[in-house]
Image 1 (spheres, rainbow, N blue to C red):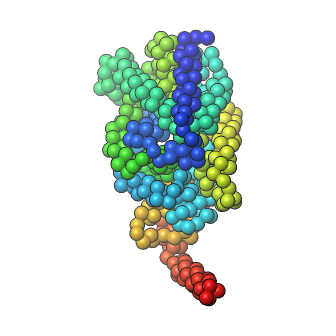
Image 2 (cartoon, rainbow, N blue to C red):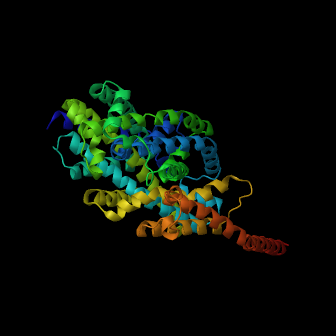
Image 3 (spheres, rainbow, N blue to C red):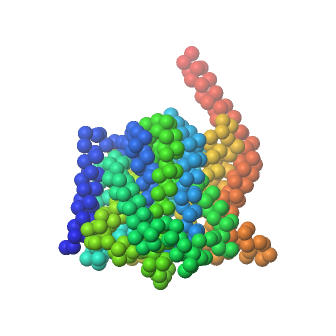
Length: 504
């Protein structure tokens, strides 16, 4: 066993220990399991939300996107920073409503506010559909990181399996507490590794960050600007807006917001997290450096640019630390995603089927669902699947279709009702799948449309349609809803009168 692999396994075991140890002295009921009984302070909330940014996608994909697509990669820090800015006003309202109504999951929030179990079921299904591919990415990325960092001593499949066993074990035992404790070590590690690599590599090979970009300008200048079509300015703007709206609609981010012990903790994080997100730029520096130092990586090989350049530059023990940081970037986000997906299905679907189920049964089912979800994600992570790869691309576009329902839930007299929200979601999701499966763009229907309009992301087009359909259907069904409410009031009055007469 080489030095690198020993270091990686040591951190894996330490993460397992921390995850299990975090449950000590706590009565892990459903609320404690799902959202830490809404008792996490500013630091834990910060680390958990930051954990949703620094994932294996970021660790590998941040540098990989810079390597393969150049300036287009900057959409990632742009949308995340904007999401945090928006969260300063939006997320405390979600937290307040959830606390007042004892809500611990995203499906329960929508079902409660719009008084619709059908909407809760739809939200639970969409949330799970969005998260399974992300869990798959974490496990697959973990396998790649450990395999590369161990110099091939362990295969990606075995590494992914070991990671899945570790994360499943401590999530089942400790719930959200396990994620919070391991996030502490993970963020310290990723902070140190990304800053070190992002500074050392440019200075080692080029003498600084400015010379690095001068070298890229001399070899591949097109990587430093957005394309005229495809990853163009309109694509960049529409994707940033779409993903910023969708960031806290991902069930894992939504659940993390509910763990806070106060609105103040959420606002403090909204102020500080954008600065923390800018550390992603260090990962981009590595990707740009790899353009010059290790040219020729094709397609998905671009995601290996950080690891390949690190292996070319450092001794095995340093690679072990890099690999350990990459391991933790998979375990922490995957644990939150597993927890959120299982709780969403339990509260959004199982409670509807069995409303009298005890809390103990709900907790047991959530733990069983964690095992089921991780097995499905691990299978596709090891064997691959074009269907899930496509779903991953679509997941952000799909989950953001919950935005109209969320945004209109903040007004005192909501313009939307459950019929409008459901109709808008279904119409938008149908458009997303149609355009993705057929490869259709706006130019397919309007051939003379300008490029900057044609490049607007499919998810944003669907979101615009979603708002229009949701508002129109809500207005059209407003009278129907009013009639039903009046009918319900009359029935309650009749029942009260009958009770009164019987009593007399």
